[in-house]
Length: 168
Image (cartoon, rainbow, N blue to C red; front, side, top):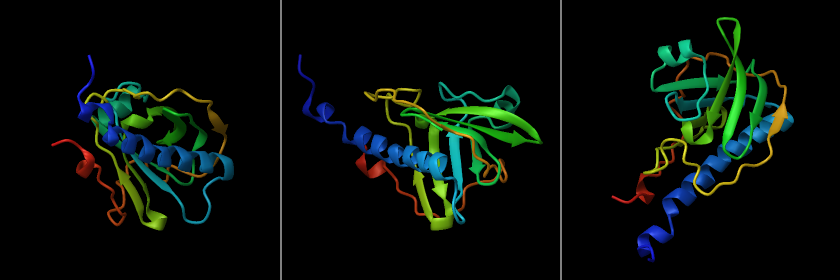
């Protein structure tokens, strides 16, 4: 049985994957070259999303959503096609965070007034990576982030909303 025409080409998911690719490529650039100039990232993610690995006390402190800052002190930054990982210091205690890219709701680099806002797609909110294959991981040890893990994203960034591409 053939799918309905509107279900065959899921442009909303294509756009979502493409924009999440911007996040992946930005992280890969930081792994390769470090954060240059005033660049720094605010990354907000869903703490209860499938595949998110954070310490229990952080999940309790940030139920639902958490924002991390990659700027001055971060370590072991990794990214592949579906996940990113980083070690940050919370009250001088290093903690490893594993975040599926689909769990990210906001990615911002306030130094260049850039931000992307993501909303879960129907059927993709809990770890559905669509048809994306897993790729090789990029790894690096870098010092540069987590200025303030409790900080909220800057309000001055340009936000690109995907709502106009979604079915109503």
